[in-house]
Image (tube, rainbow, N blue to C red; front, side, top):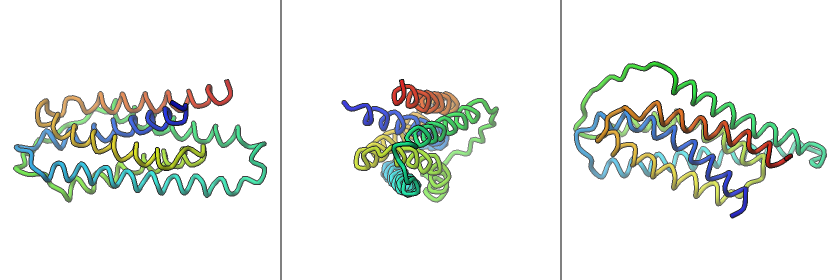
Length: 193
């Protein structure tokens, strides 16, 4: 496996842990699962795919401003790593926040509310897409990875939230934040080590 594919999978997994942390709270409120839950998992994946695509395009657009690419590879790689580190730190801070969980049982999934949550969370996917675009990673691998891993984590979040409640939320944010932070650091070590 190429190192680029490994980094794409690690980035997608780190983002998926953040999505899992949000979705598990929603799943904790559900009384029963139905097809709307699976459909919402597909919506989460589609939004993450679109955000990653837009970010990748932005990253490639930023590269167009680089006239002498050979001289600036260090700075481009550093910027991509810093983006991932910043996302990781933001997720770690979210994991450390003391939150009060308001439980309000729902018969069905509130698609509108979850759609708005998905739009809020897609910011991380957008910035991770910028990092992948700056690094010229494979776009098809990024899109497949972002979509598939997000759908699995969203559906898994609804199910585990219903089973275990909102308990795994902070841990999911923490694991995702650490994963993205370490990926951003490892990116520097692999490229220039």
